[in-house]
Image (cartoon, rainbow, N blue to C red; front, side, top):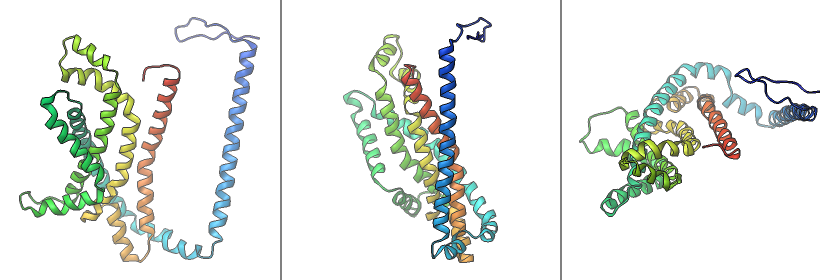
Length: 292
């Protein structure tokens, strides 16, 4: 038995054979069976873990200290307001990191002896800020720079945003540089042979190809920054973490910290799933010989 299918243009395609239809039905059956087994095993595993946890000797005390619904409801307004500050800082920092990291990556890819000072400066910057822990950078920027007395008085979250940009620009610059160097040199030579300048070749030919290669890595760095944006609380900014700390001190209960953590997870989940989907899509395109 064979069936005719029609393409989007209205023209019929080659009919599928009975063997091919049988293979498709078998694959659908196997897929459904795998999904069912995965769901059942996951539920059983979750039940086992839950039974084990709730039967531990200290579960009642832990539940009262970390999972009190009444405390969570009371802390919600202040913690959510703090999360909005985290989101604003994240968006501004993401734009700053994109600009600074691209500049650093461009400087590191310059050729010629005359550009050695710029390359050395960019390399020293990336080495320094990739080695320094973010919390140290936050202290140096948030408390050191205002202490010089040459900068205007700024809110603590502004200094936290600057520290995030300084640190993550070093990481993202190396991702950009890896993507740029992964583009075949013939692409650059082709652009120059057409009369394009080095800058225009980089902007119109190299960077679009590099972006496709490093997009998953860039998105992973963005996910990491979503978590680290909570560290601006060490400078006194009343973000979600600081708000949770205030509510914990008022109620002598750690539930606000759990609430803040869950909000950060919910904030990061869409980007994590998008990163996984994009990585799988690019992997499939590579396997079939598509352009990546």
